[in-house]
Image (cartoon, rainbow, N blue to C red; front, side, top):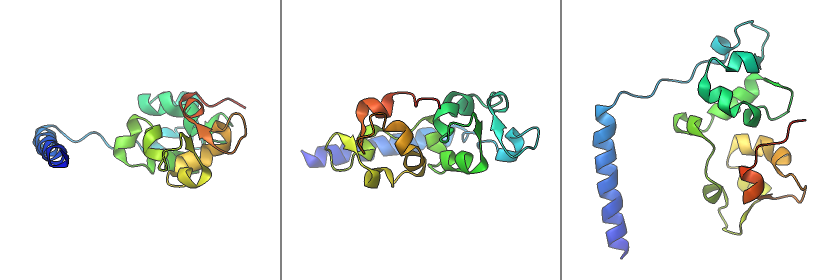
Length: 140
């Protein structure tokens, strides 16, 4: 059975690699300075509107709830790599022990989640449930 899974995975990787070679690479994310149009060292929600992905993720990236993005918050959001601009990692990939909760040690593997941990832990029990992970973070 495991051989069939490995064979299917290898086939899928071969097809996706061939498909990816025929497609242009996705555009690089904009730089912090290109989005900070007024040069004040922060990205406001109106400045973020120039990038649809950043605009959509703005409240999750604004980990301190200030209503603006610092360069550190922006870099933390991009630290996942180019594929993660489409959204955060799955709950299951973060719940490495499979207990249905994300602990602070599990969250440490993801810089953005680690920064946002207290904000996402809505009930303050020290872990993030799947419902808390999927809910939009509360505004301060």
